Length: 260
Image 1 (spheres, one colour):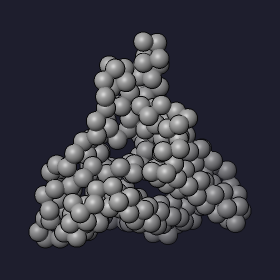
Image 2 (cartoon, rainbow, N blue to C red):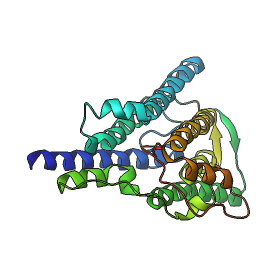
Image 3 (tube, rainbow, N blue to C red):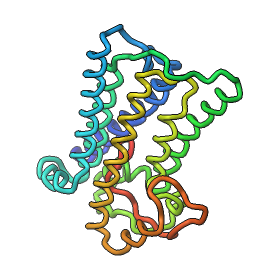
């Protein structure tokens, strides 16, 4: 019983770490209500800021992708209980995000700034909409599965955790990765684009484009023809005028922000 309670507490801690890191990231990129935003921090030579920032983002990409791969999960679950694997991934991802936000070096020189009030409001609305799309998408595919809560609750209840099957998940009828679309919208919707913010958005977007290909490779191997048919009908990021297959799998490898 003690072990089951400890597992539940561990999962709750990991989930709270995710919530905190995601909330801080939204404010960090907006540059509001936090002690350090994307354009704040000590001055540093441009070359040093680039090296530090690219190293931090590369660390996130490696951690986020490697820990999500099936071969790593198989090996990792010989070390940690399967019920804690997802929470451990979430906790590790949140820790890397926290390190990135803490050690980020600003490059505040302006790339663009929207002057008309209507344009600024429109871009801020897009920023908020991006995060809303992200959160809605996570609930469509099983938010509490995605971030490890159902797994640790099943362990606490001494029941078997079962992954969800195919279903009709709303936005997933129009694009295969609406959660990532939410990230992309949020990263690029800003009335004031600095070099640092542009660097963050560019590298993060490039990572998303590459990472979803690895994810889809794993899904094709795992799910076979149903996923192949779904991928043939529904675009990755940009919706068509008509929705595709009304059948979509639960993604298995996006970010602790999604697992991805």
